[in-house]
Length: 183
Length: 397
Image 1 (tube, rainbow over the protein chains, first blue to last red):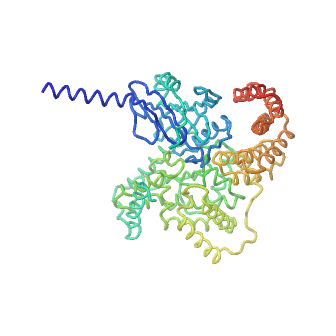
Image 2 (cartoon, rainbow over the protein chains, first blue to last red):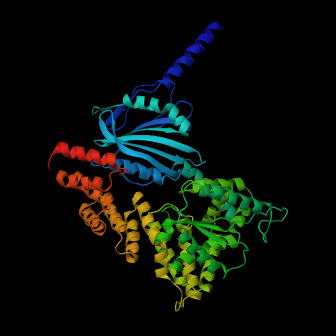
Image 3 (cartoon, rainbow over the protein chains, first blue to last red):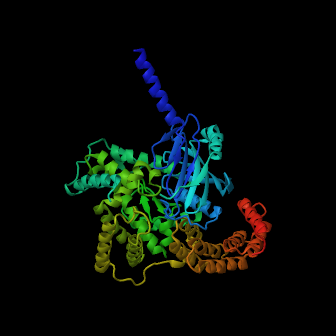
């Protein structure tokens, strides 16, 4: 019996560790990234990196490398190689403003930002979700070659935003881009 | 490839279509009550009205309402003219405008009509507006929401169809249940045809030219078919829309062919909508619909030929579209905006951006500097300072 309990504890600990700090490399396209997942956060199965601590509607961090040729869902606009960070930021704001699931979008900040040596932008927005709940999103993005990288922290309300914003910023400092060797 | 949600939708839509062809469900028997001073209704209608009022409150708190009191007054005046020619409803029909670039209008069962800026911006005159309002008003007066709701025995299937249909459409999630039911009428062909037929009769009785309804609907269907805007409640599916156009053409040919001395009211309409044209052009630019945006700005310029913002927006259309020669056209319009108002900082900055991207640092610096001089606390100050820093590092260009 004691043995079974130990095995159960081991399996639980192993699965917890693998969820809480998956680490590793997330890869898509010719450029990819590495980022350190904060302790206590778990990965959600998505075609991009999405993590949460208490549930995605309370707080989530999303990190994505997106091919610039891929049109955005609502505006159908595409990033272009020669875009300035400000133009890329405007495209993201346009996409949020055109998102059918959100209302009352407010842009609290839109400014240039350096994301671990990459010149990009940061935008801070608030909006209402479909059920009238308020969300805060801090969005960083930059273009590198044919890829648009973005890191965003979304929290359900100001309280959750304040609670984990520093964790997000620490995670952002661990973010690194590398070129995927040709196969 | 058909995705899972599409398959789900097709399946549900199939069930829904069965409901259409196999006849009506028996309306639930329930106690009649008053929903307003004079309208007698059963429990289900009371529920629809109560939900409508709640959901309108929620919808209007989301920041979607277009704040133009004068325009709202004008729309309400037009709808009052139409209501005077219609069957009694004993409730004043009111119109509100939603800040959204899509081609939609919908009515809640309690007589509140919402019309999108996108649909208004495509209109050229009051007769076209009357056509849309008379159509929507008919939905209220003929209690179409209630009739659609009662039609289906299995209301959960009905609601799932509603939900799925609306999930494809902008702001739908904020409309709630009764709004969704109202919107769903767009997919009940028989009710749409009735609203078209009665709407045409009402607008003609009010003195408007019904030919404008036909030409406007034809133009909008063509725009939708070109793959532009997303599914529209007002025009319904393409198939339904085509049938509706054919019916309107037949009605027009048989009953309304005499277009002499009919009201069109282009000038007053353009004057009342002028600000909306520019605001909606901004929304169209945001969604990458540059052609529609340009048409709206050009309409606006017919009323106010010397408007700085209109020329700035024309510049934005070309700069953001980014095709060959677009940068030159953009600069031409920005310069005209500056000619009209030398302090228009956004135009200074936009010209700076074009030069900056072309590597013309000296020119870029000049425009960025003038922008900051004119507006030292500009919200994009940090970006402009970064550009100036880069210009200084790169030297003359």
